[in-house]
Image (cartoon, rainbow, N blue to C red; front, side, top):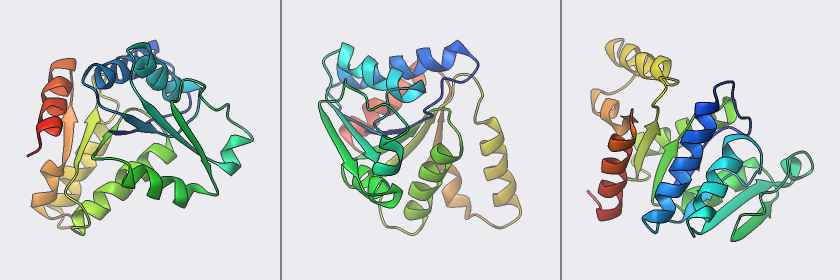
Length: 180
């Protein structure tokens, strides 16, 4: 499971708690976490949550960020790659599904890239957004607007799955585990 999220903690402590719980949930299901490799913010909480429950964690950090961000020591497999495109390609190839938590431009870039690749039929992997706080409501409103205005195919609307509480996350993870 590839998880995209911020390397900052955000203002609401609930973001860190949610990231930690997602990491724990993945580990408890025996799912390997693939993520951006940083130790700070939501990324670090996510990885430490997975490792606290005995999970395996692949962290992928580009050289340009390795100099600025601390690498997460909780990773069971840590790779430094030359650049962001290489990072995204490795994370994509190592993952069977994608989940986004709150984050900034980098998180949205990664999320939208996997959505574009899905739209182009490059993959059929599940894409979810764990959003118990409503952080992504603006993104979902934009998807609806872009669909109404004819910029997105209606079939794409359901591809980005909103997971608004722990129960919805659990059901989605169960579906991802067993396949469509």
